[in-house]
Length: 184
Image 1 (cartoon, rainbow, N blue to C red):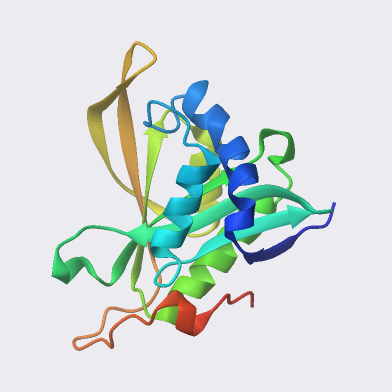
Image 2: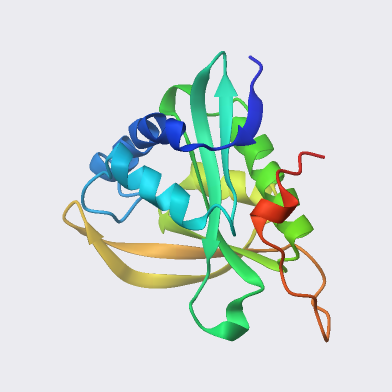
């Protein structure tokens, strides 16, 4: 099936919330306690999209996945690194949507001038690990027993992907609002 990749809008918040809810409620993939409402997703999108991208995969008018980037850490020296996340609707997994969506996110972040993409994956999660590694992320470490969900302590794997060469005097990353979506 075909799909397109585009920038998320606040109108996508209900579909994003519906995709994300099972990851929160039924699985240990997300460490949130309650699935956020569409209103909360709207707030999250609005709070970062001038600086960081939120992207959507859409098929026949249906949002089937989303990926986004956010600030890695608050401290000033971390400003060249971003944290990334991706979620695909359960009925559309293993179709290549995640890979193409994540590659669009990576290209966009590279064009903005970020140098490192960092992802955390609640373990075990072979599907997410495979998808991250397929787009160039490499295992960087594990935080042991840092999340307690569904009656068990969970490890979190750390994955990292270079976006650009680290230069001695890099230019500051450009806002997403200035760069826009980069597909190729």
